Image 1 (tube, rainbow, N blue to C red):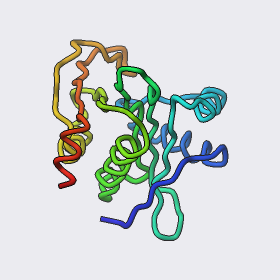
Image 2 (image 1 turned 60 degrees about the vertical axis):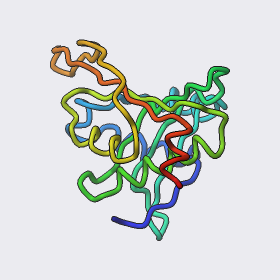
Image 3 (image 1 turned 90 degrees about the vertical axis):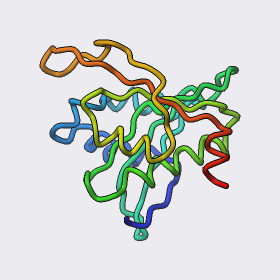
Image 4 (image 1 turned 30 degrees about the vertical axis):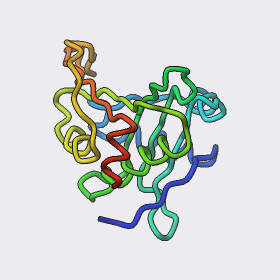
Length: 165
């Protein structure tokens, strides 16, 4: 697993984020935004854009968190993507984002949804401590027009704390 550090993204990171969102095959599993939407969210305190970098500062992936200021403490992993899959980056990237959420915000619950066919992502989420809560039946509209289920997953602050020891 490569060494990975996490930092807040800046406007200069938007081209990398957009390029990563548009990698072949990613349209099946993650969304994509235009530059204006990314810039608006980057400036919004309810969002956190996090960049994962290697020891030399080269970007490896990103995470977009949202709803960080909700009164009920339900924050969301809106998007996570790595530039090179199958390199062991996803787990430390998500672990860093979960740590950021519970160390830097008042969130009690961090949730996400994942397309039922995205087994690689589900494995990462389980490894980090997310638990499947339910199924949103046929809620995902796939690029080919078909429908797929979303699995709803979350990790609670006490579960995160227990995993940290």
